Image (tube, rainbow, N blue to C red; front, side):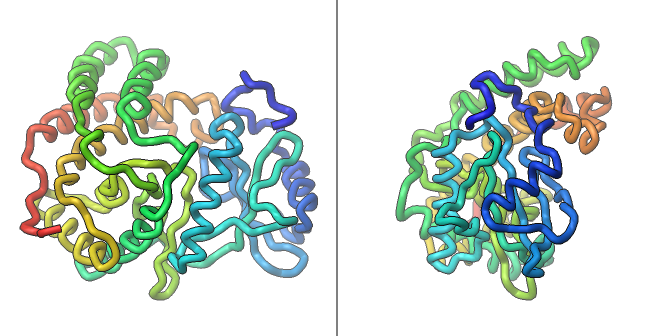
Length: 334
């Protein structure tokens, strides 16, 4: 990135003014005829607009210093591979023979704006349909490998996150001892998570309900910003909620659809609670790391309140206990 030094702040969106966004879009042949509507994105900056051709587009400006250019290009290539295989996924537009562009130090891409709402499965049949779509995505994902995208590992999700939280000024002194009294043993237990026992593949990486749009009967995957390599169950477990028995039924429905397109190693079910713990810990560290970004302070004001950290202490205790529970037993022969 031409204008940003290697030690530039992670919060370097100060220079991303509306004029710069418009100039960047004009540099690739798009001429906004409407205002820029900021969409619900915190890690990056995402804007919807109508061009002078009356078509709606979405422009995504990547957070400086988060990903290397080749990592972003690998993300965009993966999504295009899915789209070419007719897996519903929103691929960046090819403009001036490129999908990734740079303007005054900011890397960005442009998408056609698609309609839809967040998918809300109301019954097991809808979960089976969702599982079928994830299976289609994984069938394509398993046909290739990431070379430069990150992987799911203990060091990146837990070890570095715990180090970040130790430095956080948002955790009050009176709660710090209680917080680390549970986080430290939990993180130590997670160190032995047997990720190395399972095959890694390309993943969406952040496959939750909010990243699946429904338009009429079509389900479309969006936001591959966290795509990485890891075990297949990572793209399934976030669809589960409720008591253990309900999660068993939900996973059985997901896998019934999933296995129409892709085999699933049910031994991976032992990873669900460890991966849930990985995510909880990483999420806290992510908010702490980004707190200087005013967008985070506006969106997550509760993160600086003692009540939040008290709730996290309870959540971490539940996760530590959950690691001792038996994994889901589906009676499903994958």
